[in-house]
Length: 521
Image (cartoon, rainbow, N blue to C red; front, top):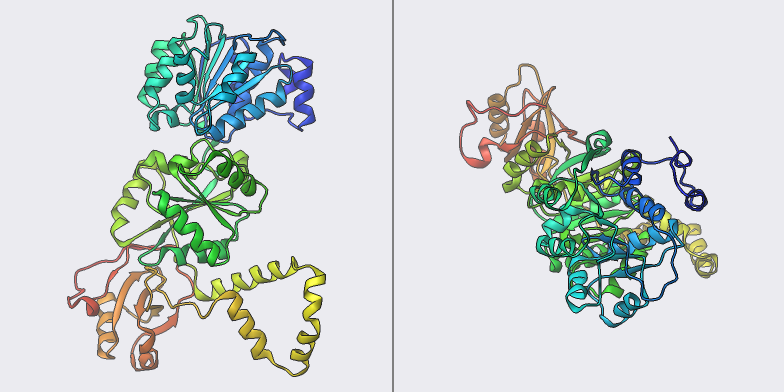
């Protein structure tokens, strides 16, 4: 089915065609026939799957143009955040240019928005707090509303807007059409349906959409910022969102990433509306590749083509994880999700997996070799963007260096640009000061491996069992003595694709490994 098959006005179909929109998404295909008939409905779908058009088109179809000054709104759309309110307004204006859309939200003065409302509006798109303010002041009259929309209802609940939303709905006519959209259906949404909706039809396309992104868990025992930088270099996303827990940390991480060579900006609740819009515009246009955000600040943001989401700090609940992760892998595109976890968060990670019904792929932190290679390609990309008029200034100097064979100077320049030697880290835990080796040998068991390493006087760190042997962490300073280990072959591990729950070797903890088992791959 295509949009031309729906009972829409010709001008609406033409507006869709001009934007290259011909076929509906699953939520649009399921919701539109019902919404166009005037039925109340509850649409469950992830953010970024086209919910806006699912209610914008019925509004555009139902409302006729009017030039009456001071006219009251006939449609109301409530969104949890000002960013989403602005996005919804833009979408409505694109498909319904015959309607006047007024957007009201907090974080800015009242005067201009009040004037807009006084001049008249066909559709009001609002955040709950500001809408209720205007309602109580008499600046907003909802007595003529024919269609009411609650967009991202679960987000409005998590932001504490229950009372505001219910007060606003109570001020609209009972015979209105109500459309509710949400990624999840909390009990509050069900209560709203019972009190404010007429026999709503429930549509759930979340299961149909499935999970289109890969999920990885990476151990982060120490310097998370350095690890995050390595991940961004190796994965090289076009756009990435990094989630932290606090406003202060967003600024700290964004500043740190800038220092390490990543175009990053923070977004949080303390930013002015002008600054927020400036950051978001830079992110959409690719000037900023990494957005560091708190959960609250990111709610409602609809950003296309985010190909990496990083949980820098553990989400406070499974729903938060789902909302964060759902910002990538949209519209059938692939995406990646990375969650960083510390030594004390292993249990939380397992609980999160059980809650979402999926097992995340355990991978090791990027190796020094991978990071260096990635930084090299990153540098080449940067150099390709240097204007000819600039690099020609230094061409004679470069020629002299190559003529003299001063390779060490070029290497030193690269070290200045890319950073010095990366620190050695365990592939099992991400801890610095360890190297991970693959240990193999005939009839090799865990107790025998530990005994042989101790006999050679080696300090043993974490050990994990694989299908073809064991992975063991050893100290870099012990490398010269590896040849003294008899009966076992030790090879430097380049990658541990799936990490089991690693544990401390007996030598490092002073205990006996006998009777203890590793998790298998």
